[in-house]
Length: 242
Image (cartoon, rainbow, N blue to C red; front, side, top):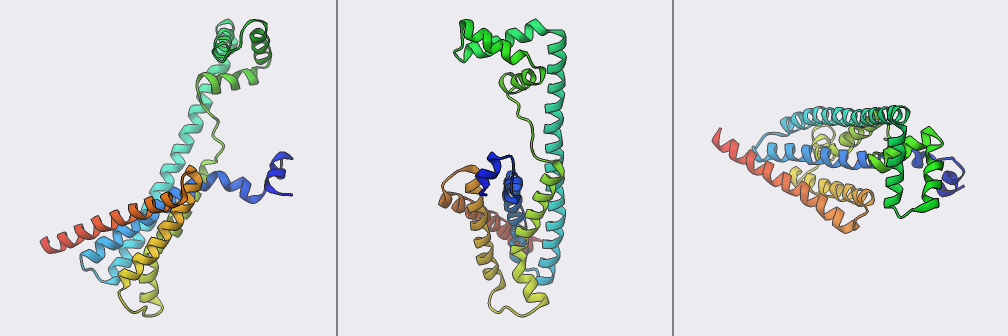
C-alpha cells in the first residue's frame, strides 16, 4: 500500500507520521550549520589553533542547539495553550450567548455567498453539534488551526538537526585532530564540505517552502557564506586589536 492509500484508509507509514516535522529538521539544520560555521570561521580568522576551534565549535553546537530546541518546545506549547484557551471561550459563548454565536455563523457563511433557505440550512446543520460548531468558529472566525505537532517531538527534531548538520563544519577538524592528518588547508576543506551541507539543507528547505530548488540551495549557501565572511573578518580584526 503506497503512502497515499495509507492516508486514505486511515493508516500512515513512518515517513507520513514524521513528515510534519520536516520544517524543524530544515531550520534546525540551517541554524546549526550557520552558527557553527561562523564560530569556526571566526576562530580561524583570529588564528586560533585547531584544538581551540574544536572546543569552541562543540561548545557552541551543544549550547546553541539546546537553546534553540527549548525555544521551539516553548513556542509549540504556547500555540497549543492559545488554541485551547480560545476553544474553551467558544464553548462558553455557545452555552451563554447562543443567539449571538448563531448570528456570527450566519454572517460568516453569508459572506461566503450563501443566502436564503440554503443559508439557514447550513447554519442549522453546523450549530446542531457543539463540537462541529466550535470547530467552525475556531477556523472561520478566529482563523486558528489546532497544532498537530507534539512539543517534545518538535524540540527533539530541532536539536537533532542542529547537532547533525552543525557537525559538518567541525568534521574535518575532528578527523584531522583525532584520526589522521587530512593534508592541505583544513579550513578550505571545511568550506567545501560545509557548502555541500548548506546546499543539501537548502534543497530540503525548498520542499518545505515549495520554492524553486536551485533558488533554495543558493539562498542557503549564500547565507552560510555571508555568516562565515563576517565572522572571519571580525575574528581577524579582533586578533590584531586585542
